[in-house]
Image (cartoon, rainbow, N blue to C red; front, side, top):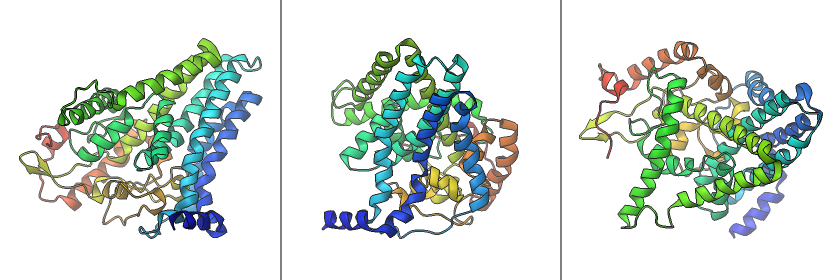
Amino acid sequence: MTTQRSFIAAADPATLVRALPFWLSLGLLPLAWVGAVWGGWTVILLPVVTWYLFSALDAVVGLDTENSDPNTPEADLFWYRAVTLIWAPLQFITLFGLIWYVPQAAHLGTLERIMLFLGVGVITGTVGINYSHELMHQKNRLERWCADILLAMVLYSHFRSEHLLVHHRYVGTARDPVTARYNEGFHRFYPRVLRQSLVSAFGAERDMLARKKRPWHDRSNPFFRYWALQGGMLALAAILGGWSGLGLFVLQAGVAIWQLELVNYIEHYGLTRKHLGEGKYEIVQPRHSWNAAHRASNWLLINLQRHSDHHYKPDRRFPVLQTYRDTDAPQLPYGYPVMTMAAMVPPLWRRIMNPRVRKWRAMYYPEITDWTPYAKSRLPMPR
């Protein structure tokens, strides 16, 4: 019956039309080839379209405050799931095709090559890692493998372990590396999270194995798969593009990681779960994530900006994530593309966000008069 419904959904034009806006991300891949083939000013098309065009579209098409039925059958989400699965092989072909082509392209100068792969990193981070985030939460084996392959292409495979085993469990507490502290600028947050997320991800997998009475080096530890996949990606880049191709591969991976952590930074900045005593914290609620209902950037990011509902119900697929009113969850004034750019300028970020954090505290936790222990991370770690 499920298979039959999937075929019906695939054949239903109305279902496809509703899903089409989320397929806009595929239009970014040809822009990478335009930059590679034509060179010149076209090498900046990727960041311009990803950051600025979608920001402008947000201003034009406005907010999307409607919710789909969260009980929509899986089969009816066929066209939504398809775009996340299609992206993985298309990104692989594009990335490694460019690594083969660009080092031998005589019409491209060094600066053009660097700028082009900065743009490639923007889409492997903005779209690729975001799609891997959707896929890693699913039970389907193919989807989880696609998530691992996408993360290996940006040398950040441990993100899966850190996100599933650490972030979702400890969000809003000092034990979660990617919950940005109040007044913590991005340039302090970034090196801290690079170090702590890797350590916490490995520790979470080690501890899980220990509970099964197995050593960390048991072959079921996914870090061996992570290392093998990343090593394979590095080797392929070197084979196709030599030292130049390897350098360009690492460059795009660095930009992608930076993009991911910018998003992590803004998603929970200054938001903390109330400490209940004895190392216990309140359960995760919609109010513990920042939301943005901006329609166009949610098309690009497959509803990642409905982040409160993702943490509240992590198993929901992106088309049925719910949006919340500002009385139920805090709202960002702009979509993620604008907010991530603001985060790169800490004084501007604090001017925009600190008053909103203080308002959030007064709204949800008027009984807490001293937030110093939360800001300084002096509360007991959650168990």
